[in-house]
Structures are given as structure tokens and as C-alpha cells.
Image (cartoon, rainbow, N blue to C red; front, side, top):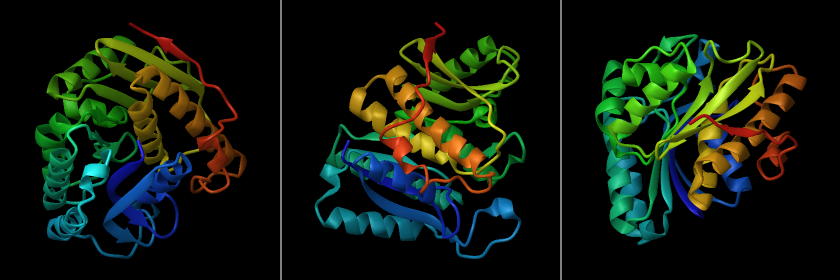
Length: 284
């Protein structure tokens, strides 16, 4: 993987969306063609922010401009995150279709941003519907958090067996690879957190200590890093191990610095040479 079209939110202060995904991708040697769905001063978790939400026609226009340069055939994949409204979501799926026409081998990784356990659903109902009916079915890879996994499948996850059943339901919608980016259930030790990946009827877990930090953007970063490693290796467990090691290192740096925004700049070497080797264990 050398070139990725990344369509996500952007913040000037802090690191979420493209502001969390671009640097890890670039450190891994990927040329990022970034299109922003919003241009905010900071992420909305601060309670106040400024800046515009863009629209579907603008995204279609930018993708059309790239297409006119005759370069879409060199795009190896599309990465999407926060969509903003249904028109933006439809424009993103149109971009996926254009890239696939130019390069049938291109992959689509959808981070189905809907909400989280702390805030519930924080997108418009039409976006959650679009994710379930259109975006997830067209994706090769999806990277939900636990809340999004439950919301998309209508399954409550209390155990590892529940998680595997929910993941199977997500596979049935279309994607061949599912990465659950934050998995906590009764089988997870109280001081740890799991990441679960599934492909081809098999599943693997990466378990790391739970760090005393709560930040935005880590999910955006791990989706990007996993996408690259999977595209290059076509091995779900190998991509899981490499991305889990990098993100754990990033979060350790962040915790040691006292939390706040993820310390993406200070910890950027973690993406190319992780300081921790997170083990990956098969679960079926």
C-alpha cells in the first residue's frame, strides 16, 4: 500500500479524524490524499468548537478533480471515518466506487463512527442507518468500537462468545475483516482491554494493560495503522499485532505525559518501531 484516499474530519487543535490518521500513515510510507468532512477548531468533546461542516457536493467535486488527473488507478485504498451527514456518506461511497473502477484491487476500510459507551450515539440517525445499510456492506474492513459493534448488530456483548457472535453478524453484512478496537467484557481482566480481529471464520485477540487515560483519536489512528498493515501483509493477526503494539506505545506516551490529547508527534516513532510487542492469541 502506497497511496490512500482518506475522507474524515479535521481539527486544527488536537488529533482526531484525519489529524490522527495522516501522520501514522505517512510514517509508514503512505502518500495520503486527504479530504476533510469538517474543519473544526477542536473536537466536539471539548463542548465548544468552531468551524464548518462540509457537504457531499464538495467531496464529490474534490474526488472528481483527482479523477481528472488520471491518478485514481494508483490509489490502493479508501479510508473513511466521521461522515457528518447522509450526503457526505453517499459522496464517500461514490468515491469508493470511483476508486474501485480505476483500481479493482483497491480496498475500502470503513471506521463506522456512530458513538461510544460514554456518550451513546453522537451522529444523526440517518448516518447510523447509512452505516448499516450501505457503508458496512461495501467495506472490505470495518473497525467498530464495542458500542458500534453492538449498535450495528443489535447484539449486547457480555462475554467473548457474545463478541464473536456479534462479529459474525457483522461479517454477514459484507466485510471480510472486522477489527473491534475496544473490547471489554466479563472475560476481560479488570485491568486490561482487548482488541479483536476476525477473518475467514477465525479470530484473534490482542490484550494490553488498561492505561489511566481517556482520549479521543486513538480509534482513528488504529484504524489507519491496521489498514496499512493488513493491506501489505493480508494477515489479520499480523496486522493486529503490529497495530496494537504501536497504539499501546502511543497511549503509554500519552498517559506518561498526563493525558489530554494523544501525543501523536512525540510518540510518532511507535508507528515504525514500537517499543512494546503485544502478543496475539487465537480464540477460534
